[in-house]
Image 1 (cartoon, rainbow, N blue to C red):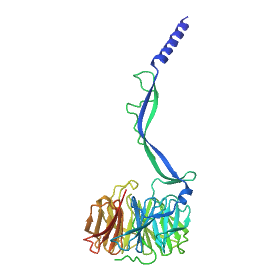
Image 2: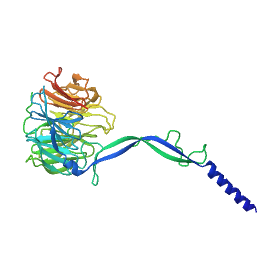
Image 3: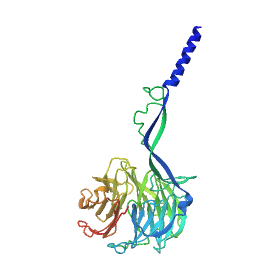
Image 4: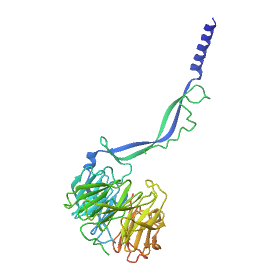
Length: 423
């Protein structure tokens, strides 16, 4: 009898709980949804096309060849500009190159990266450039496009589309004063910040790039640095580039600069020097290690000039210019460091040093005495990225556009022309 009474009481309690206290509430929270956007490999390999000239919108690397100036539009292609008169540059055409970041030119053939491929384009007629060869899959990953990678089934991840959205969900309650069965979401929901992560005659048959370049040429070879390798590509027949060898250097390789038959390679942790006197087989000579930071390098005479900066991918906490003694190429030595704001590209002409100091603008130094350099000029009202000095004319690129200066008197830079960015 007692068991029957106990059973009846438990049954009544369950009915009360289920009918009177159990409820469902709807909650929501704001977040961002990241959707990957892929481009098929077939699509980007058929994407190299010539179009009419267009405005600068997101400029990157620069290159000069004869009287022609080339500006990379980050990830999209290359502007061809007639710069025979630096005071009045004229847009000629635009080459659409999906996934492009870098170029070099030899004997009228432009070499460019297109995601994981190398393309060779005949530019002898700048109004009608034509692709003459594609070397597929030569690069393990896109060279300069952060976040881009190859999926053999889906193609190239080219970007993430971000959309604000509201997520709605239901929460079960036993009572108004009790927390949800699924946990405590608090009044505002949880905070989701997720996501996926004067001389225009350059000489020879090759052109000249800036200090931020991953492409350069020497003798009959094209050299390209990806994030961990130095690749040598035979261009003795310019329209038929042929991969020759690949040398592993390390990690986080960023830039390459030719100095005579030597190659100065910048990484996020140091500078490497390779001997290219045997062009098809560059040999390691020496290196200089520094704290972590983005690192382009140029050299002239017995000195090398290295800039370090912090950045989203560079980490570190140094923003400075390092001047190195490279008299002994196997053991470069630091002479002195100078603080900077956020230095990127650097250019050298004799004892005149140009530093693209990011938001701090363009700085020009006399570096005759590396232990006591002198500031000659400071253009502080522009944001700068890279520069190519050419004897009397300096070509500089930044987020504001392209600027050309006459630096016959480095203390009195004369602005010759500007090509603005239009967004």
